Length: 140
Image 1 (cartoon, helix red, strand yellow):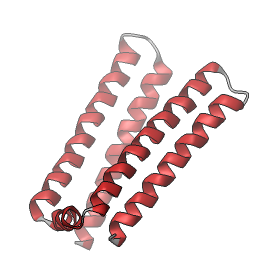
Image 2 (image 1 turned 90 degrees about the vertical axis):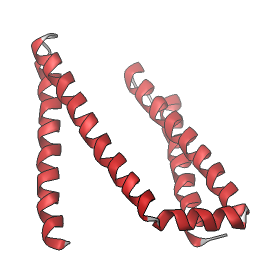
Image 3 (image 1 turned 90 degrees about the horizontal axis):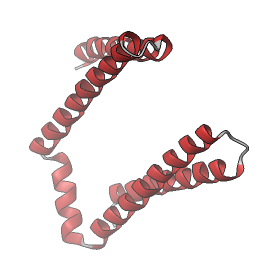
């Protein structure tokens, strides 16, 4: 099995283990129902994601032809371009959703704390983007 595929399997095993720990914390720690719900939800998502990804990469690793195809696809220009576009659009979509929910909370629901937190989060993400753009522009 390829080293990259083994590393992916190890990474997603850690995800699954963290998910199990979160579920155990939710079940046995003295948390409020809200905190327990957050921990159990986060744990369930990480556990399912980790197990599904481990299964995917172990299936890829068992078949040498699929492994070679997967490795070739990782460095293919089209795949890299699509992945970068998907990350960029995900950032923009969630940035605008956060901003809309923040403004909706402040103006319609009259929940200024939630609205301010979300708006500050959007501002922080925008500032981080601008700083990283400058850094990467000089570096590359």
